[in-house]
Image 1 (cartoon, one colour):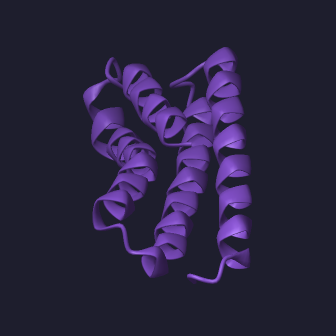
Image 2: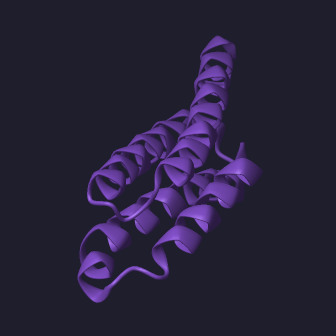
Length: 113
């Protein structure tokens, strides 16, 4: 989940780096921030290693993941990315979302929460 989230952030960056100034200062910044936040929240929890906070960090990561998806949809509608990029990134988002949801369900069954 963490590795795929890191990869997603890098792929989003790669798509945005060539955008014009206006696109960079509006949607680009928001989308990169959201995409990077997914893995960064997982890493922050790991650094703290507090199980009681883990679920909250997963919820924040999931919110950032869905924010990234919304930004990608906007980028596609504004013709900043193509259909193949949208499809590839949306597939990664779907896989991460599935992993996050399964992980959250597993946490809810554990005694340490």
